[in-house]
Length: 209
Image (cartoon, rainbow, N blue to C red; front, side, top):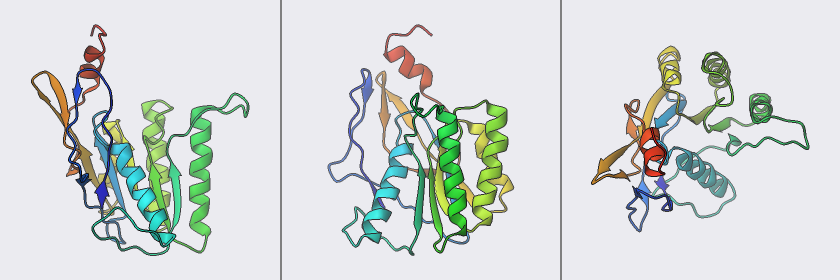
C-alpha cells in the first residue's frame, strides 16, 4: 500500500519526499491481526493510519485506490483519529476517545469483521492506566477477530505485543539528523523505535532544553 505525505513547514526540519509517494506494505489477516506502530514525531505514523483507512473506504465503494495492489474482505471500519474535546458536549478528549472505542468494540457483534485504526491510543491519561486500559481493549478486539493498526509514542505499550500470543507485531517509523536537520524517509520498519525527536523539535523552535 502506498503512503502519501505532504511536507510540513516547520523550521529546522527537512523532509524530502519522492513525487510518486513512499511505498509501504501492510498485511493484516487471521495470523497477524494487529500492527503496533511506534516512532518519532512527524515520521508518518498517523498518516499511515489515514492512508490505510482511506484506501479501504475507497475500495469498498468501488473507487480507485492509491496502492500497487490491494486485496481485502468486506469490513466495518472503526477509527479513533483526530478526536477532540467539546465544551458544548461536556466531554474531555479522553472521554470522547473512550466513547469512540466503545462503539468500535460494539461493532464486533455486527455482521462484518472490524478494521480498527487507533491513533495515539489513550494518550489522554496517565501511563499506568493507559497500559492497562489499552491492553484490555486490544485483547478484546483481537479476541473478536478484528484486525487493525494502532500508533503510540509510549514505548511501554510496545510490550503489549509480547502478550498477544503472536497475533500482533511491532513496527516503527524513524528519523535521522543530517547537517543539523531532521530527515524522514517515511519507511515503516519492523520492531520498536529506539529514539525520539521531541527534544530536537523543541530546540529547533527555540525552546531551551
